[in-house]
Amino acid sequence: MKPLDPRLIKHATAVRTFLTFAVVNGTVTAAAVIAQAVVLGDLLSGIFAGSKSSADITRALGLLLSIYAIRALTSWIGDWAAHKTSATAKRELRSSLARKIFDLGPMWVGQHRSSELVTTAMRGLDSLDVYFSKYLPQLVLAAIIPLAVGTTILTNDVLSAVIVALTIPLIPFFMALVGWFTQAQVDKQWQSLQRLAGHFLDLITGLPTLKAFNRSQSQEAGLRKVGDDYRTNTMSVLKISFLSSFVLELISTISVALVAVSIGLRLVNGDMNLRDGLIILILVPEAYLPLRALGTQFHAMTEGLEAADRVFTILETESVENQGHLELTTIGEINFANVSVTYPDSTEPALSQFNATFRQGELSVISGVSGSGKTTAIATLLKFATGYEGDITVSGISLRDISTQSLRQHIAYLPQQPWLPHGSLRQSLSLAGTFIDSELIAACQRVGLDIHDEAQFPSGLDTVLSSQSGLSSGQRRRVALARVLLQNRPVLILDEPTAAVDAQTEELITTIIQELVAAGSTVIAVAHRPSLIVLADSVTKIRQLEVTS
Image (cartoon, rainbow, N blue to C red; front, side, top):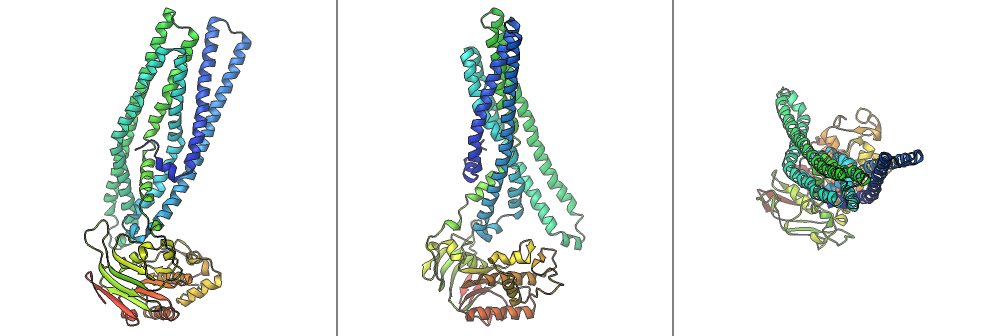
């Protein structure tokens, strides 16, 4: 676990500005610390020696008040800048994470638990508040103040500077040891949090089924066990945090005591004047204070850095967005030649030796038993699945050479389980582009959705769609199909377009597909029902990873 991860600077541009500001702010703070010690040491030694007049004391006290005000102001400005940077950095990281997940596609998302991704993006990144507001400013101060204070001590007393130089590295040394020991505990804490989030999400998702079979109460023990694991791991991290703080406090206290004893003995023997001794005694604790505070904040920010590390791992995952450079102006024949796909976490191919040709103005159907690779073939064409063997050509150009963005601009895709955001019907349809209300209504009517039916759409296009909106799975599929039609793309890929719909709706959807084909569109459909298969111009049937056409 690095104190300052370079990837944080790379992916969160606000951090660069903040670090520059923190260095300036830390330099001012260090100057104020040294000035405070010099003024206070000079004032106290003058009072004991009787050489300070009332006017001198008044001026010195006024100067001290000004220095305290400067320190308070720099502290306030530093906190303000840290919180502002934290909010900006979290926003940048979340935006980058959302774009990256979108680029990686549904196949990648399907290999990861949604609870883990949500926990990382929300709770995990929120933990960065402590990192920005407390740890990172303290890290800068720990780099500037000990060096500045040590240099000042050296100009006044070499022996004290040597003692500080020998003892102060002990603090980062023990911090590193504690951090190394803590890493395993932090990993266990984060993993238990992910298990808790995943278990809770699964429980909430399956609660209606559990309730229907009277099994909801039996989940209490499992949820309590997962929660206790997280509590235990969290307390282990806190225990280490308290113990490490004690160790750092002990080291700094003993180090300051060594300097104090040395100065006291030399003051008694007359080998040091009181002014220099007081200045050094005031400065020495200030040299250790930033490092002690840094060690205290180290454990508070570990969860945030753990989540950030997970975010950076996702952001640095190879994306298909960077693959291919050729731009498609038109899209013609699509050809699969001996295409095989094996996912990274599997030894068996999900698709084996797949051959198919999809022509413009034709309905091409891919059929086969569940798990035979139909969806994988579509995902490979859309560049959701990468690392395939064989070759796929679009208009005679290898898919590997085509820009991902350019390819997807020509294709509209209806997945097997279409996603509708929580929002109004207008917002869901508008994901396809900017349209006026009459166009949205026409698209809904085309797929058999009656916007004027107050029972289903009480607010028309402003009706909120959610899991509790009352729409059936077939109606939700038709909303997604309307969104696909609005895109008006030359190639349409439909994964089970007639699943979970009644006979009347199925007839309507097949009629729409026929109209699209007649208009010259390339329609590729995954289908089991004979209503689409009998209309197909070509059928590619996959059986147990063996392809026949």
